[in-house]
Length: 222
Image 1 (cartoon, rainbow, N blue to C red):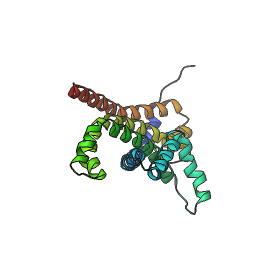
Image 2 (image 1 turned 180 degrees about the vertical axis):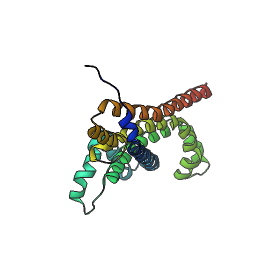
Image 3 (image 1 turned 90 degrees about the vertical axis):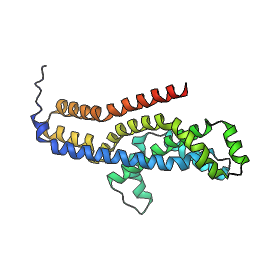
Image 4 (image 1 turned 60 degrees about the vertical axis):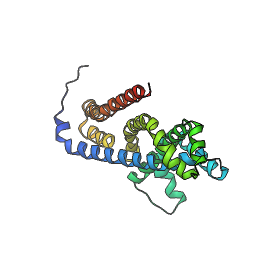
């Protein structure tokens, strides 16, 4: 069966897609900022030798790394309001699910980056009288973060794709808007083709930057 492509309805609905694109970018950027910031503290706690700090951080990481982000989003939207006095909207539920998921993965990146620094760096900093926080802030993290950049950038790429999961709770990001347009106009082929192209145009440059940064870091290490 031949299909006649018709993008006129997509052009007529471009305002909806632009709203969805804006919501996708807003959700992705917010979750990335939260994940990178909170991940630093969780990763440092995971690296700590104090069990009272290490164990809760480890439990958090394992729970959010080993359960699907889709389940986490739906849990915050449908289950969390039942066991708490708070009512949260779709944007908040999506932000919580994706942010905590990103936090767990970023925490492991931080931990791995910290562990990659030679033990002699710690010993030298300790020998000159630095506290643990001073060692981390002045010696360890400046070196470790340079090694973490490619992993963080890859996570940003994955996170932008994961924002489409928020469509299952009717948050008006790009995928949800596309679903509405497709249902109204009966044009799933054109609608989802355009959405795929929008995601590609948005994410492909990020992926290229990641490759260039990784290549630059490999050359600088040689």
